[in-house]
Length: 331
Image (cartoon, rainbow, N blue to C red; front, top):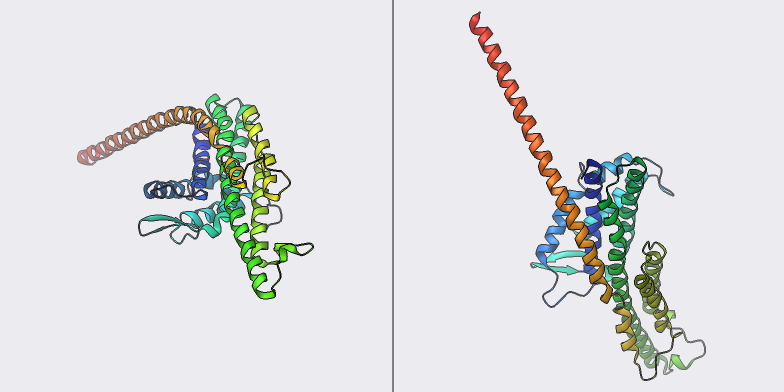
């Protein structure tokens, strides 16, 4: 463990909080979301983005002009991360909040949460990889850090792809409900079944159009993740291709197997990445625990050295004080 790795790890841990916040994109379990876990993430995130944190120091030092903005790149990144914190973990959070000792998610803002998590995690990942490349050139890169970042990408993306599939299925169900409501209203209002009319398009209805646009955004998040994928694992790449292909079930361009129901295809689509997440998690946990253990040992050694230095200075000050006292007595 060296000081460079210690610095990067403090930024990397922020990416972990952002990644783990994707839990709130999924339906809560039987007992709901864990309140202690939420509070722990809140506390850790606040610590990792405070004004003296390596993340904030990095942002303060990144003074390049941001594209299409009056802010610097560092100011823009810092602003986006603090917005994420305010909306997910802040005292007046809009997306995830505590209500009567329960963690509650505002489901109408799921896409905003997805936007935060996917965009910001990619940013934090790029920052860490930038440091990795710099350390490698300088000859100070530790193999464990490189291995950690290598294992991080497929683990994070497998979780993100799963979250995207779940949200897309939810939005597709909402869209079908909205279409049925629109058709029923038109039948009652005009006595005509719009599905029988040429060029039937339910998106003329504002509610249907809104949800359709949300579904398009979710597909956009999928494409973003796929484009930035760094893993060349065959199973992982095959899962991405399957998910990309299975999106066509929802627009009707891919036919169901004989006797298969759409709900079966939806369930299969939603769980494409579920079987492979544990393997990527195990690989990530092994290297993370190793490097985190080394980090703890390193910081304890630093603390001991700091305390020894403090004690040494105190002893020197005491000796100087005794000398001055002796001189005064001689006078």
